[in-house]
Length: 371
Image 1 (cartoon, rainbow, N blue to C red):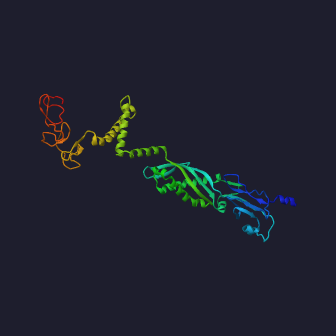
Image 2: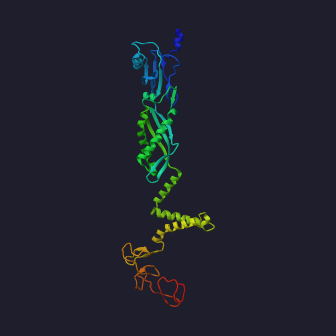
Image 3: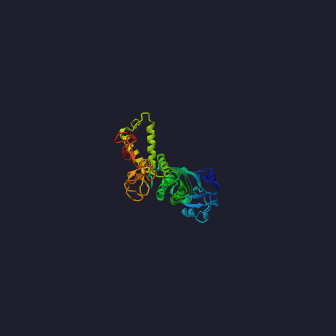
């Protein structure tokens, strides 16, 4: 082989990689059957690491700077190839440049919803998305664990795997923190910090460092949002469930009243459903009627407002007896001729026949006149 042919197989005297991409993590320097000359200069720029590989084994690693290739700064390769002191002949080896800068604006998102157990709402499906950033922390470990024999290795070759790690850890973190779906938005920063801390060990195992995780949004399905809105609105009411049921019953009755046919059956609920709704309306308004719907009376002993169906006053404990005043409905003790509240006479007579009437009589038992 002539000298000219041999020189063609040797690499240039300066070895370097000018990275003009934004997502290349590993670049294998093109050898094309050529040999490396002893004394050549190896340029490693900032945010780069150069790794020499001999027959599949990682040899020497060079940090940023200008390096002259000789046996003195190739100790591992010298040992692997059994070079003697002062070895100056060309040699063969693979050179890999590792990009150690931070790769930002990497996106993650849930393809399938994350299931979480909410202490108030039960099982809830959560969807989310955000960004994260990472960098190569240990070049040797990264080459051993992930990189094969390709010419280049880009972020897209690993982002699917990293994304699955992030989503899995978010699910675990939500379970550990036991945060309600109502409080997720208010705690997104804390969740992000916890996820980044938990994932760092997993990234380190493959030679990477997770710099930051940003959760831009965590959301629940639309039907759960409506449920949460309903609970919030109920929280603004005084008597939550009772007031809410009265409100819903009143709306349903209003809708039924607007129906031209004037019946629940015409609205599509049928007779059985109408009876069921009637029971709901009755239950919903019962407490409201008891508390101020016209069926309250005053205790004759302590004058407290109580239900007309109560036999004992819940405030003073005394038996509720007597006759209601025909004018103000205040309970007056038996035998009293005048009401202690409004002063009206307790004796009622028929305006036609002057027959003495019982209190609250609607018809005269003597002449039949309607009162």
